[in-house]
Length: 154
Image 1 (tube, rainbow, N blue to C red):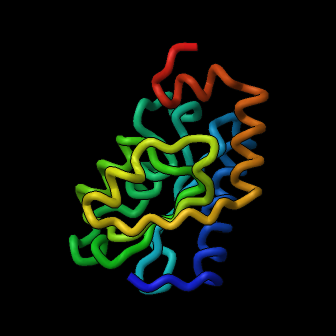
Image 2: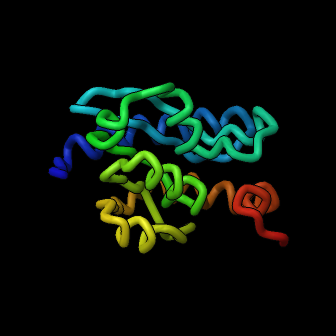
């Protein structure tokens, strides 16, 4: 799947905006955007705190917000996310055969990129400073919330 640096930055900015909204709501600052044929299909953010949910990560919230799409649509879309996906979100990407993920940053967290690539998913990491800064703020201000999100006991 072709990539365009300007488009990638544009759509990552949309995901980052969702992450900031989530943080402002008292949640975890991870956002996502689903793009098909250069058009924004949906956005989402980690809303585990806001909804009392166990599965509303940024990517899963974004896909839920997209609603029912055809397999062909998913298979020709790009998922933008501010943080490298966890195994749950990666599994959803694999299930719907989304061929490409653009990741804002993976220095804070990375578990599934090798899995995704081994199944043919193109994973492009932009190492975005704003995405990293927002996650570092979470780790500094609310480390317990982060541990809960990734299923780790402190």
